[in-house]
Image: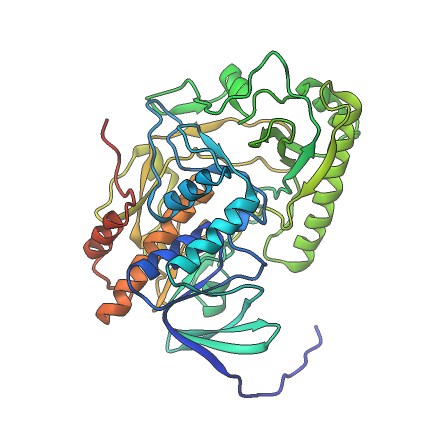
Amino acid sequence: MKKYVEKQKEIPIIDEVDVLVVGGGPSGVGAAIGAAKTGANTLVIEDLGSFGGMWTNGMVITLAGFNNWLKPYQRYVDGVTGEWLRRAEKRGGAANNRSWVLHSDPEIMKTVADDMMEDYGVKCLLHTWAADVILEDNTLKGVIVENVDGRQAIMAKNIIDCTGNGVIFEKAGAPYIMPKEMQPMTIGFFLAEVEPNTFIDYEDEILIPIGPEPGYLEGDVLTAYQSARRDVDVDRFKLKEARKKGEFPEYGGPWFGGLRENFPWVNSTRVYANGVVAAEVTRAEMEGRRNAHKMADFYRKEFKGFEKSWLMSSASTIGIRETRQLDGVFQLTGKDVVEGKRFDDSIAMCAWAIDIHPQAGYSGQHRLYVPLPFEIPYRVMVPKVIDNLLVSGRCVSVDREAMAALRVGATCGAMGHAAGVAAAIAAQTGVTVRDVDVKKVQQELLKQDAIIAPQTI
């Protein structure tokens, strides 16, 4: 590869803060507001044009991870993310019940996130991405950013990597792992003018009839409860035959959702690529959009209720399920999840299934293992060697099975909330996030209505 040597130049330091959050998805929103509520001078940057990440720009409108799938279907995420949900509910933009996923309106979720940032005094920069890090002797001092104003620096006492892909810890040189073949990516989309099945009512609350013991979701129960919208469905045998003949693209599910009966959301496209290679993400975005239109056309031609339907909108960014995982102070494993291991430094709970989407060549539904809700220890967010840095979201220090459970939005928001509180307390007490008093973090999280331990019946 040819090289060009960029000239050295001075760049302006545009801010110096207690806590800098990089990434404005559910994890970043939780981190920024959690830090600000704890009293820290906080700034969040986001490379897209709104906050919410997969819940908004990624059009993942089934908010996953709030509730236990198993009887008695208890709530396991609250705090900042719970406030986001309740504010959206008041505007008619989210369901808030015991369902395994909660329908939402991404446009309302965006504006609620904006309001919360303003209400809690978080400084924000949209359309701004991290170009490099400022590192001194394995201590992170700041981040170099790029936006329409040019190349600038932001200095911070503590930085939280909420990028999902580990952009900051990779640039800082923290060790990480990455699978050779990753889970597929998905472009979600909305259909318009669909007539639901008249024999199945639209259900505000869908409870999967399993539990309270952990186990696999499979067979007839999986078929009956795989979608948050059971009143919208297609002939899955016909889809499989069309796929075999090459008349339909590779697909997952399909899974349907959405708050409005005649405008269902579809989670089905399945594209395989490396989510941290720009050329591959570009190909995946283009292929995913193309396949979404192929799916919509096939539904309209082949299935009852879809005769007048059309593709109304697709996600502005592709959903990436798996890339880098931090090699941190502690690694949470699938074995820990299944065994329900308890941790003295638990800072959040996860109530999602071990949900690994299959590799290329497999279409349709896949079975999942549903564990009891499990604790997430603080140590999974702490790098081994880099100071002044915490990591939140799906790229924390976990193995593939554990990541497949905690990668969903509500859980990422809960981890972000904890990271923000920890970063704020560390800044205020003059210690590193590595050495922060986790008991103080836990106490503050509880004051902010977070859930950090199993619920009692």
